[in-house]
Amino acid sequence: MSQAETKNKGAIKGGSGTYVFDLTTSQRMDAGVGYSSAEGPVVEGERIQVGLIAMKAGTGAREHSHPNEQWIYLIKGKARVSVDRQPEQISGPGTLIYLPANIPHYVQALPEEDVQFFTCKDMSHGIMGKATDGTMAGAYVDPGIDSGKK
Image 1: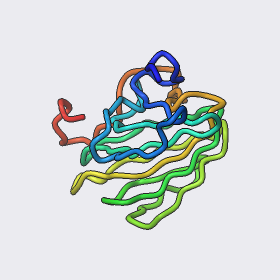
Image 2 (image 1 turned 60 degrees about the horizontal axis):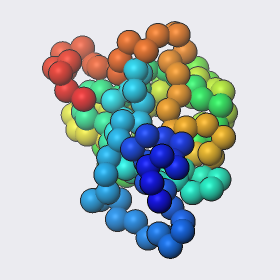
Image 3 (image 1 turned 135 degrees about the vertical axis):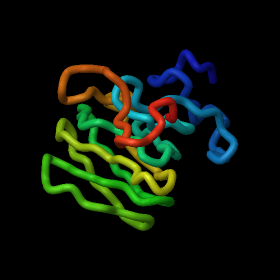
Image 4 (image 1 turned 30 degrees about the horizontal axis):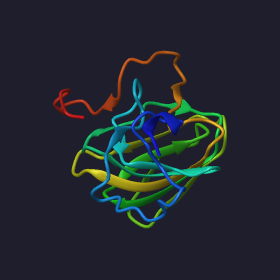
């Protein structure tokens, strides 16, 4: 299938004979342009989109929301996580995070190592959200981290 048939520019379309994907070698895309350093391969089905997403150490998403619900399963690294403006938690591999639709949240890699997670979202909206502060001023970057890192 052509890239024009995907909701997310750079995503891979599942179906029509394509059913098995090696996410470790699949094409990567930005998954949070304007508010997050998240990037990785995204595969779209008819009703669900999934991604194997990475964020460099000390970077991540500023608070944002999107009209589709999301699940995140942390595979590697530790991250600061806040959902619905609840107190921030430090989460690591094996943590499952539920993000309801239209609820502000963020995930930010701690400065010690990169973070990788598997994510699933419904297809009511693309993979990207919008920063809650109304700007698309870029990803979160910890103080002291080279701002050129993504």
